[in-house]
Image (cartoon, rainbow, N blue to C red; front, side, top):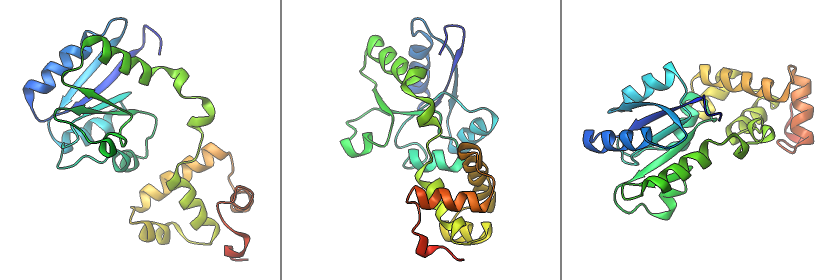
Amino acid sequence: MSKTEKLHILIAETSPVLAAGLAQCLRRMPGMQTEIREVKSPADLTDCMKAQTPNLVVVNPTFGGMFNPAGFREEFNIYDFKIVAIEVGKLNRQAAALYDDVISVIDDMETITSKIKKLCTPDSDTPEEKDTLSQREKEIISLVVKGMTNQEIADKLFLSIHTVITHRRNIARKLEIHSATGLTIYAIVNKIVDITDIKL
């Protein structure tokens, strides 16, 4: 991220005091320009995500009941932003592992800045990683080459048909494969499916 590029951050926290304090802290990070929005409810967070994909979502793990980082990314089918947990009490290791990093309310400015810079430095994401298929995309490829329709895939995976179509577009873009035959060959070569599973 260049010095002139703004870092777009969403803070998902129901406590106005905690959200405001964290926003002040993030605005003062040296060498970084930030645009910060505070959201108080899951509906507000959804609206913000639809309006503009942030670079960073800083969220209380109890936001909206129990926040699910993987499910949140999948809901919007966007994977190129980071999710950081706000640690108010002690966050267990298993819960912390679901996030890209954890910021504690007792962290000093230097620690917070270091964590944010590390997460938002482009060098940490190689182009190959950006084009890597997600587990869900591999699952969809497997079902496509087995002859299932978009509606059948949506029903099987409990997704909307719109989400399935979006996944398929992303798969085609990442792999630059636009035919069922090409996708089938890719799936076999990369061991996503076994040749015996394919309808001929």
